[in-house]
Image 1 (cartoon, rainbow, N blue to C red):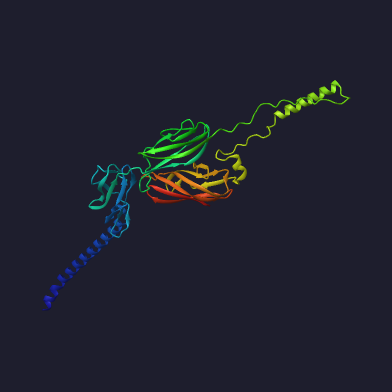
Image 2 (image 1 turned 90 degrees about the vertical axis):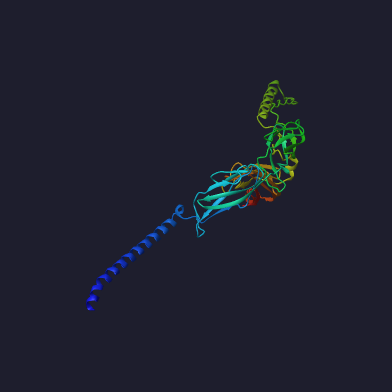
Amino acid sequence: MPGNTDENKPEESSLSKKIAALTAVIVALTGLITAVVHFRDSIPWLTPVNSIELTPNPVELAIGDKFQIVATVRDSNKNPLRKKVKWSIANPALLQIDNDGIVTGFAAGETNITASIGFVKGQAPVHVRRVTVATVDVFPPVTTLLVDDHLKFDATPYDSEGNSLIGRPVRWASENKLVADVDESSGEAMGKAAGTVKVRAESEGKSNAAQVTVSPKPEQPSTAPIPPPPPSPDHSNNASPASGGKRAKIGAAIGTLATDRPPVGAIVHLPTVVTASRAANTAFAEKIAIANGLKFGDCPANIRILVGESLIDLKSDSQEALHVPLGDVVYNLHGTISCPGRTVGAVNGRGTITIVSGKTYRCVWRQKDPKDFEITLQLQ
């Protein structure tokens, strides 16, 4: 028996070594796999995709609309992954989508958009609707021009739900070209003669008009030389021809000096929208500024503001307006805003602000829907 026990010991020792070696191999492989998984998960393009979410979902757009659909790729822990998706459309006759997810509506109908990576997909139903113009907004609605002055009008068509239809063709016409004429395509008007006329904008059979009052240009101050006053008669008994000649020369010199001075009662040039009678009875701000008018995030905007009767065309981040009446003044905003990869939207806003001389007013933005932005003016 003891001999048999001694013979089994080498076999048991060899088996133990094999088990230990196998265990070490398994532990090493487990560690390697764990390291590879952690390394893979630390790199987004190596991490397995679990789901793809599309925003917005569902998608609503009109024929001619263009905006961006965002695809969010997530792993099993709902963490976002920076991975590119492949886009496809069930019915390409209705709309088109590019590699960045920007869709363009072509025809009315229903279809689906799919974003995929391998076998993982995300879908969104799409409704492309045919939208017609219901109303047309004209800006500024009321204005004053001098003869030969120019002003460009804006027009925004809207659908029945109040969504702006930027890009729809608009045609302009003046109801009396002898008073004010307007370019048919651009909407730029020019005063021709004193009077009142309506400038009309029409789109798809719907129209609206602005009222334009054209005033004659103020008369320029006369530049004709003032004749020298006649020499004063000399009633002195001591007057002599020589002394009378001296007085005549002095009078001529006075007349020459008078021509170098501005004539008394010269016309004061007020803003075109302010009459002399109003200027005498109204307190005006020397200067106000309107700031933050050109961008909403990364979206550039083109904004025109009618403060009372002063039209402010924002062409810089902060623009000054002069001679605005102090106190409560009604304002009206109009313009366009264009975000990258999205349909141009309309900028609108109406309200009342209290004008304080020398202050700055900022534009406060609110996005009502993808194609409509509302702005209010608030004292900064």
